[in-house]
Amino acid sequence: METKIATDRLRVSFGRETVLKDVTIKVQKNTITGFMGPSGSGKSTLISVVNRMIDFENNVRIEGDARIDGTSILDGSINPIELRRRVGTVFAVPIPLPRSIFENIAYGPKLKGTTDRTTLYSIAEDCLKKAFLWDEVKDRLGTSAMKLSGGQQQRLCLARTLALKPEIILLDEPCSGLDPISTAKIEDALSELKSEYTIILVSNNTKQIARISDFSAFFYLGELIEYDTTDKVFTAPAERQTEDYIQGKFG
Amino acid sequence: MRTNPRIINTLVRWGLNAQAYFTVAILVVIIGIIFFKGFPQVNFGFILSFPQDMGRHGGIFPAIVGTIQLALLSILLATPLGVGTAIFLTEYTRESAFTKLIRFGVESLAGIPSILYGLFGFIFFVIKLRMGWSLLAGVLTLTIMILPTIIRTSEEAIRAVPRQLRIVSYSLSASKWETIKKVVLPAAMPGILTGIMLSIGRAVGETAAIIFTMGSSLRLPLSLMESGRTMAVHFYILAREGISMEKAYGTAVVLVLSILFINIIAYYIMNKTIARYS
Image (tube, rainbow over all chains, first blue to last red):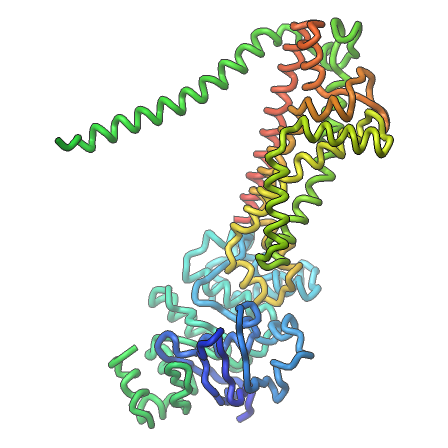
């Protein structure tokens, strides 16, 4: 096993409120790692450090370190724009850009300087296939992405992220607004994608994490309570809080 | 005793209906009178020929050209300046005393009567900078005059673009400028176009500021340094000096029709952009 993402006593505060408390975690390459915990547990904050989207928040203080492939991503020499090509993100609410399906996927590659239509088209086909959306949209790539259903939009967002050719994909509760069938399609896609990518899946749905993740981390009030293989966490959790959360006693 | 809500509802609906119809009726009456009095004057000769005898006879060709020149040039100057200011205010600054000052300045500029712009243009461009009564002085004055409208409408339009769209763009490795260019501005385009449209209307309909700066020459302005007149100015002078009410109304008809034409084109462009980005 090879460590892809590592944090070292990572501490994040917004103003006076500390939302992430000395979290040290190692995420393995080519796995799906599930982050679970009630809202306010800091799991979304943690991934916003990994993709540096935390840069857009006000009054943030970050201590400790976060590394990808052993290199700190909090270092001043890191260009967050380049980092976000390596670390793709899918948000809870699918937000297509107000343009066509094709243009949504071409957005990232075009920013990198890919302008050739044929190349862009093959990227779009490839990514839409990987996101299990191709069959549903292949005849209407030119229509507005806003016309897709919520589940299709979320898979489009996944395809759009894949088009960046990232190494890491962060998904922040990607299925929270989706029906079970759409959720299953996203899960199928993720299970196939992990051979190529390192995936972090933030979810409130413990069953989803149990179904598809290889490792599971349980966060509570900004602390990493437990982190182990999903089998271990779900069958024999070491901490009482983890067990209570998984069994739905609080959340 | 409690009044029956259904009766109130009905009364309110009738009242609001009446108000709406009243507004439309005023518009119809004004346009009706103008067309009734002016339409017999309007033909190709009127549009394409030069005025004779101070405008008592002949057409209004130079005034039409002058109007187009003035409106087009001031829009071309004011749009990049205004949209740029709006981008700066919304995307590149945090709310501070400085931005408040700029915004206060813009608000104040928007409230100044146009004759004062005319006076300023006369003193500064015409006299001080020795431009004389010229298309250039008129364009610069009008640019300053319509700038606040463009800044305000663009700023509102840009502010209305959801933050999530920007976040998504950043997450797809776009820089700030790429995000503004590719996501924010296209989404704000209908609002920005509305501001430009309002400004064109103002430019086309303005008289006071124009007479003071562009003058009222009846010749066709062939360079930026020549004087000329717009349709609105032509109308004003024909009517004010009792030269020819018939020709004045004829000019008004062309003026109204061109504003209508501009609006139709603007709506067409707007619908196209909306269709493309939604």
